[in-house]
Amino acid sequence: MFGKLKSIKGNEIILEVDDLDTYKIDRYANHQKPTVEVNIADNREISPDQRKKIYAIIGDIANYTGYSIPKEMPAVMKWQYLIDTGAEMFSLADCSMTQANNYLKWLIDFCFDNDIPFKTRTWDLLPNDYAMVVRCCHHRKCIICGRHVDIDHTFGLVGMGRNRRWVDNSSSYFLPLCREHHVERHTLGVYGFLDKYHIKPVKLNAQTRKDLRIGK
Image (cartoon, rainbow, N blue to C red; front, side, top):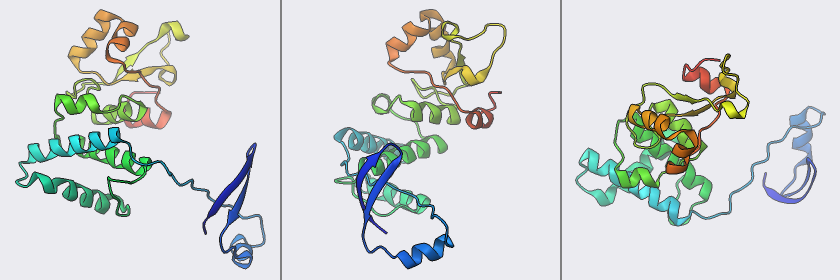
């Protein structure tokens, strides 16, 4: 069933739907108020920045694997993505920003899972946002250079209400850093380091901290 969102008032919405089958609604809901799921279509078109990042990563994959026909690599990776995720066919010429972002995340994970290194120029293109930081934490990769991380280092921002005598990781901020950049963080100080690399540490939810074996 498809339709259009007509208005929003607080947490209430009014929808105009196509081919409304009230009999089916009543039958599925078993004469109770039905539960529905609303998915908002992303009408934004892929940005040049997203497209640039995607092709840069695919280029790194082609170079690392020695694929003999580089021009075919975008098609190879797209088909692998469709097989792995069950997504529908799309075009990087005019797909949505959401589709492009999902594909970009999959490509990053593909490189991490297969130990495919990013070139410096490619790494610099990648987003230093929450999703990228969490991915680097999961894959034990330094958010700055992509080298191996021994452990996800905690940013103890004491000035933001942290108790020095009792470390509660639920209020900690994290960045995955290699040994070299961890030492640099101590040398420059937290804020000097963050300002230099234009990155932000992130809080991790309980399930993510458990998956990463960080603690409570």
